[in-house]
Image 1: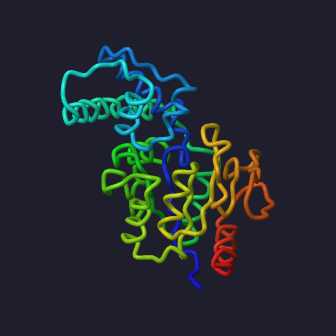
Image 2: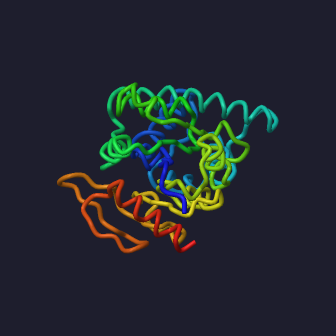
Image 3: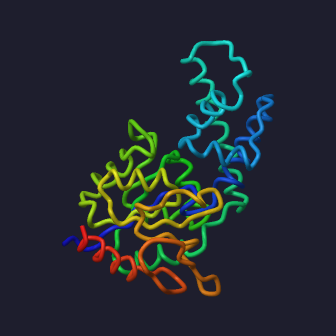
Length: 262
């Protein structure tokens, strides 16, 4: 039976609440900057999150919610236009990070430090860009934290983004670890499907406002947050767990339980 060796984190919505006050705001800023009459309010953005990846999300928006918008060019030119928009949006997103407007989720800093203290390896499996990942780490945990993560597997590095398994499969390959030696930390059903189809059976979900109500039946445990002193975690679904904060020892015990029942 493989013992727990590594934690593989999603980024957006898992490490930090990046979507509502981060990516959504940055998208709207670049739309305004470029003279587009597009605006993504909270309700619309909730629907757009069904699609992973910023460029893919904009295309989905045009196909499903703004079909009257006309583009003077072919499909290839449209995709290039959206790629350029996305690059400009990233600039706005990084500025928000620099201004300290996108904090880590409750308990993330604590759990990362516990994992490092206990010799667990850390990795990232995300659909966002490597630049967004490193900017988030630098402006929340300090530039040195980038080196805490042995592997950063990002959407640009694989053929298909979540819910496809590609990015978790890549992370496992780069770690050179079996899926049974890893836990995936996610916040959305797309992430859960991605991790599950990569063979990872131990999946921890920290649900957020955007992902509440999604089907997390394939997750080991669903919490509202990881928990910190004075801000306890609440179990929402999954295996029986009691406590105020999720600790590394809990993850080790849960991994043994998952592997024993596999």
